[in-house]
Length: 139
Image 1 (tube, one colour):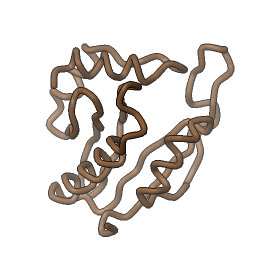
Image 2: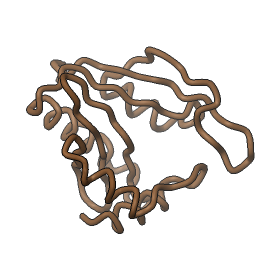
Image 3: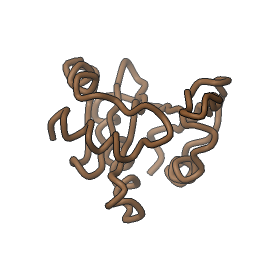
Image 4: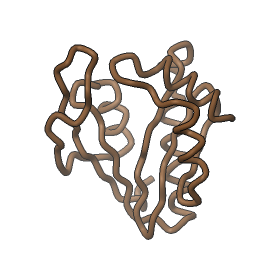
């Protein structure tokens, strides 16, 4: 999948905040620590540095949501991160994104911190980020 395809899916999926551009995806993918799993319909972009993996973004085009693609991307992320030496995975999620929080909890993530007002919203009122983590030896 190309940075342009990733940006299109991200724009369709992220309607409450600013979606990432193709140039931003291209820059991230140029980094040797950045990896991607999935397809242009649903993908997860993450970094592995030392023994930690961090989910940068996950997006499923609305046409394909509620089909388990996000869950599949998370499983692929965990498997690839483990092969790259990661022992723990982290992510942050908007506190108002209840479907994403449910997905991450289903994948074994638990809250471990918070960032006040981290996500900008079109309404002008920022939303807190919940930091979540899980060990990667879990299934």
